[in-house]
Length: 317
Ligand code: NAP
Image (cartoon, rainbow, N blue to C red; front, side):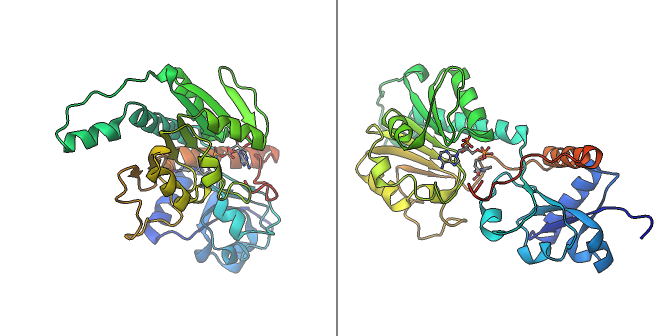
């Protein structure tokens, strides 16, 4: 092929309309690129694809592309890619979108205030026609522990600090962030849990974080604490969380993510008075900003051969 042109394959397991919407948005963001759904490509076209843009790709579809150099995911979370593409030897870049971090920070602030200003308790009192003033605790007297200080956790911590919360954080590698104590390691986690009136989980799901928040760890929280899980359901052991709610160790849990989604009808979480169930809405991907980020990354690769940091399969995120 003399007029060799690199193509981009779009590989998703989405419904046709959803995939078509992504295709249009991506083509608009990269008018100079030729982007084709992998299922509509000829073998010759597949051989020309050096980049795949993916959303929950079927691993078998990626194998149709023999000359793939790297993969860009449209999602921020990578747990499914890491699980399904074990052994895949080309770089996989995930979406890091400041707009998504901002959306998540807004959600963390909203639900932290929901807990700190006792909204669940007042809603329940209203149902009982109960006029009762609970003790007010100022944001500055409310200790919020943020698990995970990556793109999402660091943005959430910053916004919580702006509003006056007493914020600490925990991550795998030690961090130095202004106006907050940052912990790492197992001892660090124990210390953080010991003074988190509200615990916010923004950790990726990995071999190290699956089941991390079990009975033993939850027991370290101050009594009548709150917990917000906006990361992945399996970081928290659901049965242990329910136990902690029953014993009033934990006063209220706000859950946006679950072991299985959608949450099944028979889950006790639906009707537990100490649980707020959200249908995975804390930080939806914004197709417009996501496509612009992907276009920027692909543009830099075409011009200078640069790639953003890729998923590290050995650490799992
Ligand atoms: P990220 O930038 O990769 O940050 C992950 C953070 O977790 C980092 O600070 C990392 O530590 C820390 N971490 C990872 N493994 C750890 C371990 N074993 N012990 C201690 N800390 C550990 O990820 P992100 O963009 O912030 O996203 C976090 C997660 O949010 C995603 O993986 C996804 O599951 C979830 N998410 C949820 C929604 C939603 O709508 N509910 C939307 C988007 C994403 P280092 O800083 O040392 O690397």
